[in-house]
Length: 210
Picture: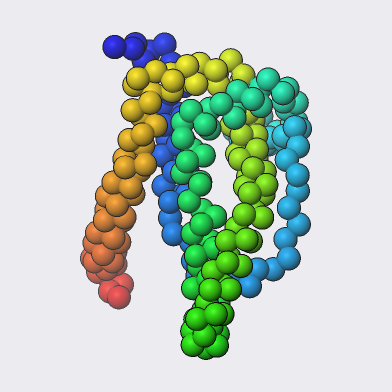
């Protein structure tokens, strides 16, 4: 059994992976005509803004120069942790929503089998065209990890993820994320309902009933 005390950064990675995986698996909203967006190419100079300290006040943003080997370690991490697998479903979901929206808005597509076939083929062609764009997404995600973790830290985490325990963690994480968010949503709904009554009770104590 691996001694996890050798990997003090694993807890931070777990939280990051669980949140990222759960968010990636959230179904997108129905597609709407997008506004023009200029997407910047990923840069190897990543600005970071440290949290302000009560003692020193706001700090000046710094820039971290990321070497190729550092970035490669980050790419190895998102592969070993299967974060990439979680995001693989995003593009198909987006294209599915585009197809549903276009079909729902166009009666001719609904009535004409040829148009439906053409739409299906068009969606597939457009999805394939976004393959390079998806690689840029992965590069940007790797940059985020490289900005937060040193190269040495990333390689230690990858070492854990390549172990039997790490492989299980990467496999089970999506299920843990789904269960965790389901429980959290139920908790939030219950607390929200109880909060209304508790606030009203507090207001009555203060002689200001609602």
